[in-house]
Image 1 (tube, helix red, strand yellow):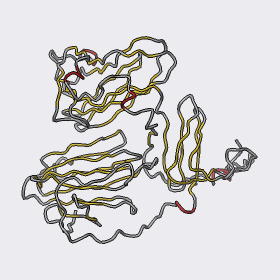
Image 2 (image 1 turned 45 degrees about the horizontal axis):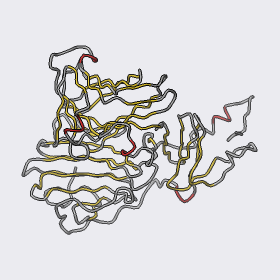
Image 3 (image 1 turned 45 degrees about the vertical axis):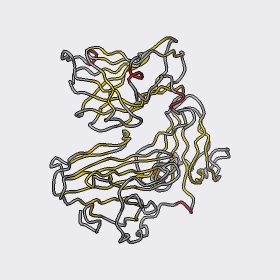
Image 4 (image 1 turned 90 degrees about the vertical axis):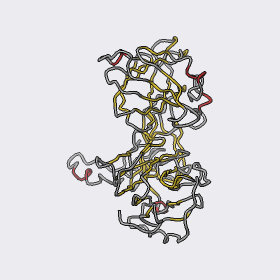
Length: 397
């Protein structure tokens, strides 16, 4: 494949001087999904949305009870609630939830995705086709992914081992797809890395042009060409650099000043697959209940949203929305500070819901990228800095 830098066996220190040319990472790696192949309608588990009583009747419970919960869910109209142990067991496999059986083929890649939350932080194990993995489940919704390849064809069930820790959990959006999601991107200040950890070549679309490395060899790969998509071979990677037009700006221009109008209640209209923004809004009739949503806007690379919400009283509630393993959402031990780092890409939408006592002084301090608007209320007013959720004026976090 040629060389990006000529080798010098007599003094490799000169080669090492060229390290760091990608710059600092702009966030964690992001999994790349094929939206068509991984649409819920293609799931091998029927009714994986777990929205009705009929949808959970095929699930088998051992030493636990399961029920439909229509109030605590990540999407749709319901989720599957798993109780405490009927009789406490110290063994993870002593309390088990099993899905309906699936006909799987030997040597074929599959992907299990599920959303989960627990009453309190706890660990669970998930087993499928003789592959067992452990996951930490927090007290807000997160999505988890398992890639597996059966060694033999047969009928398999997804087993959730919930013994040892006697803490209730909820499951939602449990899907199994044919194919692997082990394709990742990670953005850096001066480029992007695309990794294909599957056994087949994959084409990955980029939401802005990049340049291939201009190497010293005469190969067709590192030829300095401008690309908007890249074909990455099986178990291979592509290193691309930014064009002059999409360089990361170190000192962005400050956003415009906030509007003096009052944000109206209710959810604003937006399309997260085409509009990249942070939306902040509150419920009509309940001005102390707020929602923060961060969208990917159709970009294959993730947008990083950071910020915090502080109050002079304890928050009444905090629930994550569509949280993934790379997302961070914490509440301080005093219960008066919410901190978050959220990553949204493509049609993804992350965020959280929170509420506070009447009369509390609450300051929301978003830190979105300079080119991403922060919009508050159903009427989508622009926010330039920290904003009081009581007076809608400026505040000091």
